Image (cartoon, rainbow, N blue to C red; front, side):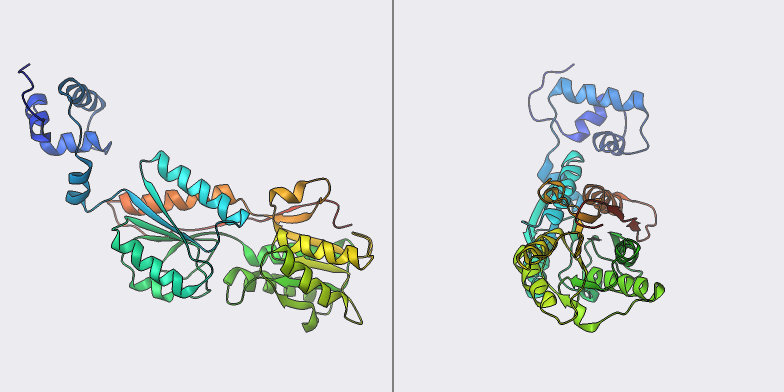
Length: 333
């Protein structure tokens, strides 16, 4: 072999191997159309001559940066945080960097960060929207996948069957003898909150129980919000005997309020959360909850965005809804 007197190019590798530049490129990027024997030969020659692909040049020539923008409304929220970790791990394993953006549940901030992400020429966007409507995403040409959010025909998404989850939670409480069910919901204009409330209402109707308007309130998923809204519920002349909360932190606040009112959980009042956060399984808490498979959802969102970026054939939006699961513990009968 001739002496290596300078930096080798992809053309040099092709000449040494005796194949086309395209074949070398496919071998380097682990794409189809190259036999395993040829791939190994190319990789060996690359190693022998000390060839290193120019990542910057590759990015410019392919208009790729191997970077995905991940926009979520709240880093500290366990469900969103765990899902983000799963997304980052899956992308990293496939050679992609993740740019994290915290939108703080603010649509204006979300729009600015989407613009910033596109300015950095990201290959794809994974977004947990801060509002129900994401019609503005139609104007974004960057491949996008939504997480914990459903949409129409134009965008891919990963979520759970939220309406079914609301129905299952209410039905579970009803079948355990509770008759006055309250719903402490999520932020305004969030699709998952609306769908879960719809399911809750359907269960009450199916079992012939009243759906009192005063039993419905919107609360952030936090202990303080859960406490505040449950306090209001327990001061009603005809207080509820069960509370279904949109999150486990909200449910912990509900438990705190119930204890301060001298109520026994679960005899006097049943409390159900959502997400199955780690704290829900502590013996001191033992919270009945609806589980979302956050790690699975994160991994699948990452795989969806990579599939859309790397797919050379005609591509169609992918839509995946996981089934919810009740985790029974001692905060309900």
